[in-house]
Structures are given as C-alpha cells and as structure tokens.
Image (tube, rainbow, N blue to C red; front, side):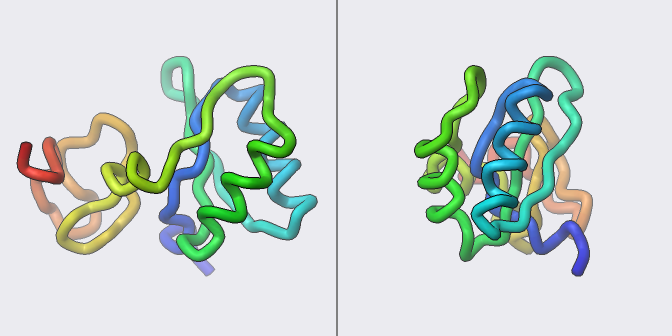
Length: 106
C-alpha cells in the first residue's frame, strides 16, 4: 500500500509532536504517515476512513505543541480534481497537474 492512501490530514505540529501523535495513533491501531517539517511544522496523515477516530485519539492524548486539523480544514489539503493529498503551500497538484493555488475558487 503506497503513501497515496494516507490522504486525510489530522494533525500539524513540530517534529517532537509528530512523533508523539504517530506513537499514539499506532498504539490505537491507526496507520499513519508524517511529513518532515520543512520549516516549523509537519503533517500527520491517515487513511480517509480513519480521520475522525484519529482526531479523537489525538485529543485524548494531546501532544504539548501542534493542533488537530478538523475535517473541514483537511478538505483544503486535497486536490479538487483527483482528490490526491496536497502539501501546504503547493500551487499545482503533483498527480494530475490541476492548479490548486485556491482549490475552492475563492
């Protein structure tokens, strides 16, 4: 199974918090992937069907820094054309080439 299955963003925070969240999720049986922080923060992604259980797990064992990404905010981090996971600040989808500078047309 490739990383593309981990499309639902559930958390953002510094590297130490990413490690805490990954450990909590994995101990709850929720598979996840995290990105390395390019500046100050990285992301934790899970499979879409695990989004809400993952958010609940993180809230029950919150890290010292970072924040849960709610489902409505996570929608901004998916390509509107192909639904591929997007990184913060990208302007073009790496999968389909769609211009995603403002994925909701605002």
